[in-house]
Length: 402
Image (tube, rainbow, N blue to C red; front, top):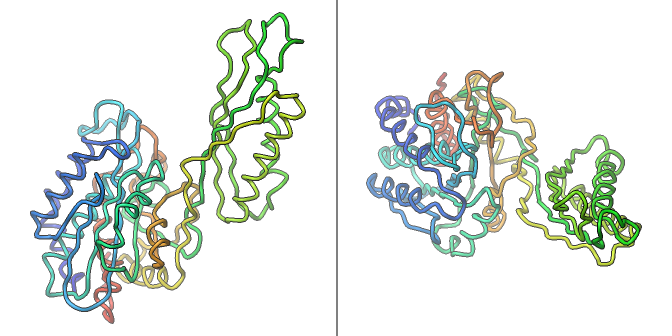
């Protein structure tokens, strides 16, 4: 079994893995621009003897075919955010881009797992597929990999696995659950039209400031008065842009909205309510033009397959012991499920604890988000190897290790 040698492998490679992680942390790249990141990933895989190739401009797939058995695919997202780092780490990224969501942990963990399975080929059977996906932060990377022919480049997986480092799971712990674990999410740009005028002549205007303000206030009733208290939904107005000077009434306003929901029907209702309210307020204000709606960054619901999750959870419980637990639903959203849904493959997604001091842990996308090196990096590798081994070491019981 691969797991019997895992502790020794982790100890022997820890220093090199931490150094590789620091490199990824210090070289963050925005969505769709992950050229150096993907080049380094490709080089590490090839140097380890793993068959690897690009998928599209910056996606990478590694494949270890090792005899008959299941096909297990594991995904790591590789892009960074337009957030200047303020973690105080001596290996902090400089400049306006950073791995403030922890994708560098995901990259390092999956690369190390590939090395473990490549090095211990005598201990397992099947095929291990590593999917290094770009552009998760813009909800476009998974769809782009499919468009670039991913399904024709890998054998159809029996299971698709993934993880995300979080500050809401204890450091070095893992947590998962069947059913919805990440919300469906979408962003929307709404443009409403008024009639511009001098600030001293409001009677000649249709004031988009008043119109936009009315829309913002009315939108607050959607979750409070249209969604069941037992359901979960979030509707955020993140930005409102209108006007340039105090004595000029503008002719339009732009609102940026974001929605989250754990149920597709709830999501549809919230989206319909937004458009209904915007149109009604425009009508009430005598807006001279119809409002415009531009939906973007649309993320699907991440809902773990029950049977797959039971198998992963049993493996986690056997290996991690008290460091394995439940993952409460997270209001963040992911495009992780796009690929397995398109391939018709069951999946399981889990949380990886990144901070020993949870009370001081920043949230993902915070400028200070930089997980503790350890036990995070070791646990990230362990989680992937343990979960994948539930299929690749079929019939075996993982040893207790905590």
